[in-house]
Length: 133
Image (tube, rainbow, N blue to C red):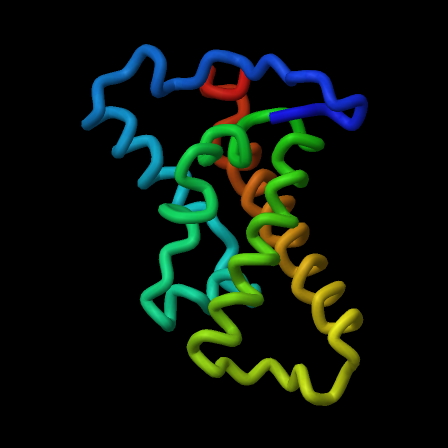
């Protein structure tokens, strides 16, 4: 992961550094339950697409718990994956009613809102319980 100045960003140690594989999966599951359901991103689950295991495979805890700018940088990767899945599976999001640029901007906005909503739900659920301190 790189900053805007193209220098490496040192990320904090994550729970996966100290927990067993089973404990990490339990934490991932608890965090996954806090993902907002009312977005285009969550619609992917209806197609049996688990973006959390593909797009976020290496950045799951960074997106959920890392600095906001690092998390939001993943919105672009998520947008690209979703656009690919929309094409691959012929999903209809009324994309023919807008330009390609408008549609891509809308998908990116949905991805950003999803990430911010997820992080907000995590804060509501876990703040004051040690995980976010």
